[in-house]
Image (cartoon, rainbow, N blue to C red; front, top):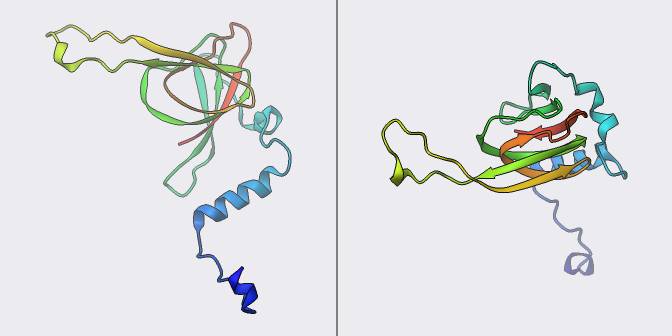
Length: 149
């Protein structure tokens, strides 16, 4: 501790927006395990006619948003090409990862086949990085997830 030995205080850390965000999140979540299904419940509004309902919690500053998704039983998203952090607040979600089609084998008018390379089930209170296709595998229970985009 050279600064203290010399009778000086260490220099103040630079103004770091990311560090402030981490500290603010730690304060908001407290010493418990953080968010749970009860904390996300007010934002989980479901439309039974859709595979999932996206409920915007916060628009952020134009660089990100924070939606809670409410997944109907046995329903899924379309295959898509983005990945985000997901926190499962209630139930479970299954992730299917697909191969990237071989562009060299394109035939006119024929769709390229996709093949599943990995399937993983993520459960309540688990935080994960998900991509490709997400589904609620439970035929009876609703699943709720918190996303960061």
